[in-house]
Amino acid sequence: MKRATIWILILLLAAACAGAGAAEGFVEEEEFVLEEMEDFDDLRWSFPIPLEDMNPEYIILANKHYLLDPDYVPEDLVLVPNKPKEGGIWHQDAGQDLGGKLKGHHMRAEAAQALCEMNQVMRAMKETDGFQNMYLKSGFRSYGKQKTMYNNRLKKNKGKDDGWVSMPGASDHQTGLGCDVVPNNWKDRGMNDKMMKEKECQWMAAHCQEYGFIIRYPEEKKDITEINTEPWHLRYVGIPVATYIMENGLCLEEFQQQLQAAIADYLDKGGDPEKVAAYIQEPTDKGE
Ligand SMILES: [Zn+2]
Image (cartoon, rainbow, N blue to C red):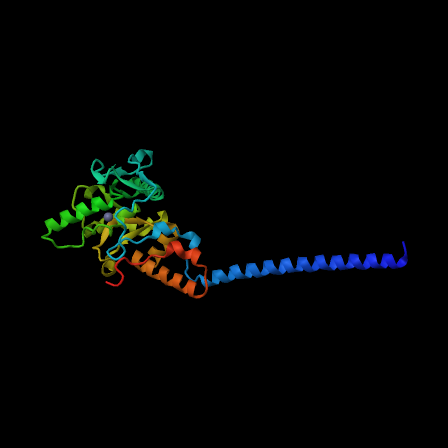
């Protein structure tokens, strides 16, 4: 081989190496930019709970201003196990037709499991703290069942809505995540706010978030929830959200208000609409 040819080969080889190096450099740079963008997206999300720690279905609001569709039925309803010895919770009025065609008390699967776990802990406190047996008085209620209950209440009350039974579509029970849990001495009585005196109810108010529940209608939030205080009504939202709500003394309406503001802020800063779409909830009585 002539010396000139060798030099050309060396030069070509050097050029090829330089090209590969440049390409590698470019890839690294591109990856760096992407990483930086993801960090930036986290910066856009100002809410204290990351999106992935909230199940959008578990935080839905059902009230007079956020009505559920008449045909809204959660997909994963299960019969809550009713044998405490086998890990369940006693049912009250379980023979009644409480959810349209459903006999007994049903809830969404994850909520039912969490309730049973909490009941096992409360059962263990029979020995240590003299706790009574707890009864599940009501779980999922269909739109139709709620309509019947609401109309019956109106009839009883001369046509006046006294805030004890939610109108159809506005009941937390239709979400399959709300439930009424009462101590033994209240299972056959009309429920009222005096139940708050029971140590079992006080314990639930202090510990329900550890199982993913909140007290849905706290005494001090009556003006916002427009529902009388109900120490027995628990609502499953998942542990991160429940902890945030209970530790900050909020009700679900206030939580949703904060969340929707955080979503608007995220979108204003150029956040990805697809990431938050499932979390957006708008009032059904807008403009009224
Ligand atoms: Zn209830």
